[in-house]
Length: 213
Image (cartoon, rainbow, N blue to C red; front, top):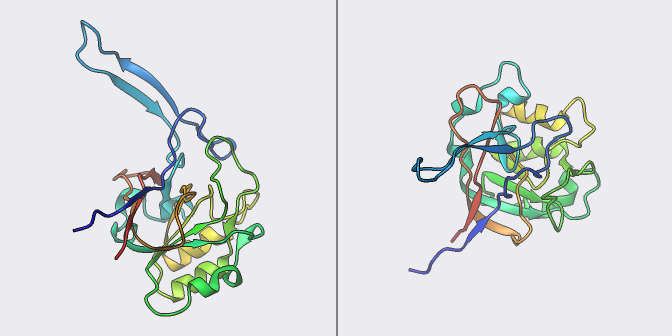
C-alpha cells in the first residue's frame, strides 16, 4: 500500500510568532531544568489561544457561544479542499473562487490559500479575509469548516466582524493562521483537532493535510 504524503500546515510557535496587536504573545520559561538534582525539564508557557494555527470557538464572537472544549470535533477531521485565491483584494469573494467550488463532491471543509508565503514572524495588517457572502454560499453547499492562511477571516481593521458573524449564524467552524505555502490546489484529508479547553474561546491546533484518494 503506497505511503500517504503529509503536509504540516501549522506554523512554528515561538516568541516572535505574530499576534493581533494587543493580544498576548508566546513566552516560555523553565520551571525545572534537568541536572544532577532534577530528572526532567519542565517549562511554563504563556500565550493567547490565537497564536499560531488555531480554531476559534463560537464563544470568541458570541457571548452565548460554546467554548472550544464543547464543540463537535467532526468538522476538524475529514475530506477538505485547498483553494488558491491569489489576487483577492481585502477579502476573497465567491467570484474569485466559484469555479473551484461548483460541481458535485464538494468536501465539507474548505481551506483558502491567499498568498504565496505566510507571514510567519510579523503581524500582517493587510491580511486577506473572506467575504460574508462567500461563507453564506459555502454553508448553503454543506460546508462545515473554513480555513485561511491569515490571522482572521475578517480584515484586520474590522470592528463588526461580519465574516465571523456569518460563521456564528450558520454554525460553521473556522481555522486561522494556517501555512499553505507548499500545498497545491486539490482535495486532501484534514486533521486539525483543538484541545479540550473547557472555558476557552479558541485553541491551538496541529493542523496537517494527508493525501486523499
